[in-house]
Image (cartoon, rainbow, N blue to C red; front, side):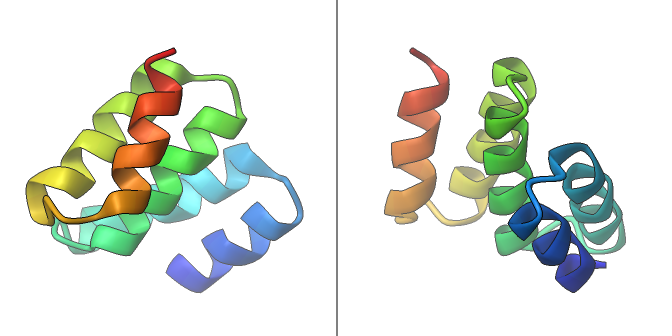
Length: 77
């Protein structure tokens, strides 16, 4: 489902991308990339609250993820 999420994101179908990324993290709660792209998809969809929670999860998994930190800062604006 992660790959399907990437395809949906590229098509700018953020709600579909979120659904696929959600399935990926449900299957593997430590799937850092799926949490990251779900957070960015939420941000693109205008849902900052869910973007923040998803990106915070990325940083719980990997506190060195500079891209997640960047997008988290954007979501908090």
